[in-house]
Image (cartoon, rainbow, N blue to C red):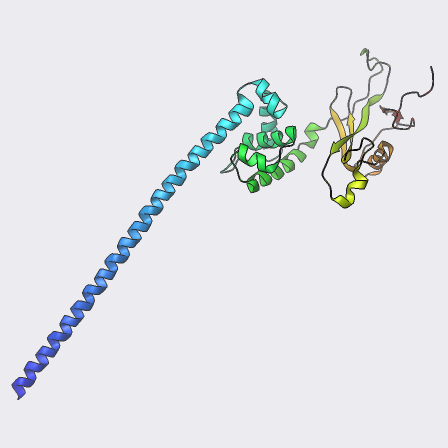
Length: 278
């Protein structure tokens, strides 16, 4: 009886060992399957990353080709697309980097950002058109356009000239008659899109929805002061009064003046054409 009991116990122990071995084999199979799955995922991810890297290189190469054809191919092409020569474009890029703080990014170099910005301004191109021309998303185009605006504003000290009066000994046939004249100013209208409720205020006398911009230039046609933002229906003299009253607005030193057209009053600091007969 004791012997049978011992044999039975031995059989039970062997069965338990066999069951434990079977479970161990199953666990090992699951581990092998799991590591095979991880290997496949990593392999596919590696292939995807490699493909993305190749596509990124192709995109960069394609974008550089676009900029080359717009700017660097020839001066005539640059003038047609960006309204400036290649040399002027390179100088502007340098100024924006050094003074304006513009920087290259993973997606766009400085010259690409500037080319995109100038092309939009030159032809009033929409975001949805630019994103296909430069192979960028609409969000990217909008973000870099605003970055360019901030950098351009930082150049105001370089781009806006300080007024210099016509000297008394001037021999220039156009300006020698206007001693102490600082330059000339006038208003212009730029077409805009506004809300339907605001259109009445933006209709100008030519029947266009536009905004009024005051521009002040020196004798050599360089900008001294610019004031945008007024409604198209506003008369030129009101825009000028606003420019004079602003804290950092247009300043005319005593004894000097600007030339204006017949749309402005002939008064101190502003010389308008004579309206009567000579």
